[in-house]
Amino acid sequence: MENDSVAKIIANPKYQRLVSTRSKFGWLLTAIMMVVYYGYIAIIAFDKEVLAARIGDGVTSVGIPIGFGVIVFTIIITGIYVRRANSEFDKLTEEVVKEAGK
Image (cartoon, rainbow, N blue to C red; front, side):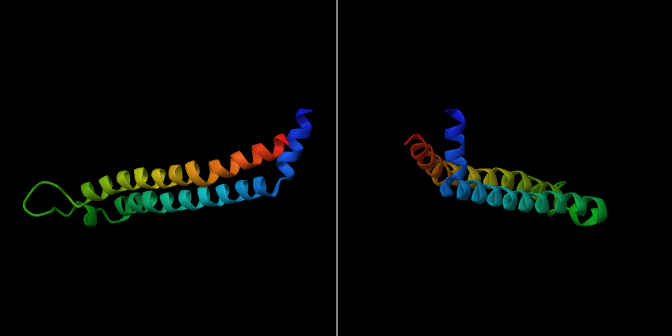
């Protein structure tokens, strides 16, 4: 009986669309995050002078606000995923579960 429900869910086009869309979206956000993070690390590794430049007459360098920006970007990109997951992905999941129960 349980295998029958699993087979219904897997065969459901909405489930296949859910898996495909969620996977593509997750990988897209992962790629964007990797570019931002490893781009920052690459600048640190290969051109330290860019991030070591001081802002004004203080002791703060350009790298500090950019590093803070990477952290804020991580929070924003997580929020984007959560918002889409709570709306589109959860709705599709509910539809698939309802259809599997029929």
